[in-house]
Image 1: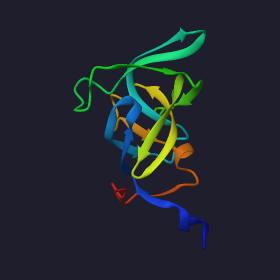
Image 2: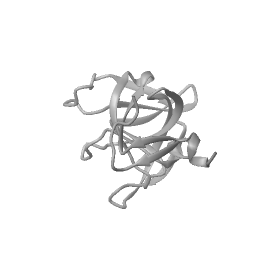
Image 3: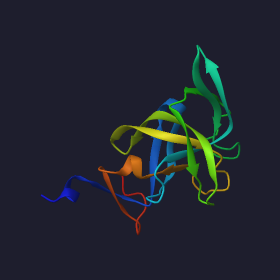
Length: 144
């Protein structure tokens, strides 16, 4: 058996669920050029809760069909510099979330950023993909 035999082939766009954020069936762009995965948010506000670092934010834009105008709060996993697609480096809050990616339940690290100029609200990077998935860029929605 070759190493690739146990990896699942996915397309360049797939569906993802983030159940703790009440987000289901979201289109996610698979980006092997990005290390970290990211989620489109706005009004991202770090704060302290019981002496620990937390963040409040709204997911998606008000004109997105899945938008619920709900403010979420999560513990901050870390804050790290991320180079965006336009080569700008910015400090981003990273959270951990449970995800359902087809039949696969895993935890994903998501940097929170305003992706309003991007077509897809979720970007899945190499850290989540490595060791589990192979990307066929000529296809979309291979996961059922």
